[in-house]
Image (tube, rainbow, N blue to C red; front, side):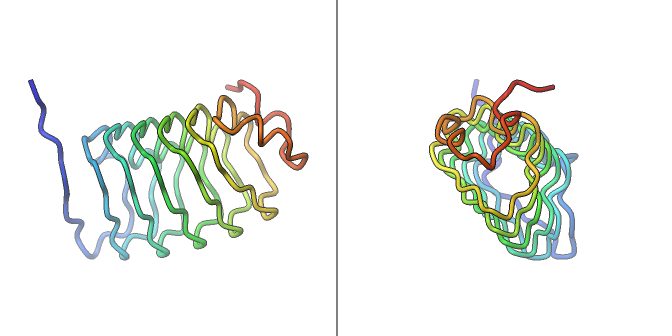
Length: 161
């Protein structure tokens, strides 16, 4: 039996924060975030396994913890320079994510941020990042290449809970 898939939805213009209470584990292929949104809260797209792409507008200043956790179909994402931190578990188990460009505005990667992003082949690590969360690149597709970067602490590549 085929279950319905939400193809699009309209967000009210006065909404400022998207949290996971309404989106959690929904079948969404693409999500367009309006420019009125300033924050993607914790668990925002948690478990949205059908989500393939998302464009984050420059009005977003914060991406919460677990925001894209288990978005296993997510292939690409833009991270605008308005963001300075990626929350804990942010892209954990985004198995289809192939490349990420981290802007120089980011100074911190949360713990387990890119854990098990097994298809990730390319990720830039700007010198602006001064804090790396434990296990942030554990079982990441480009783990071997990242290990060559001496600025990245070794605890980033270890299983950590």
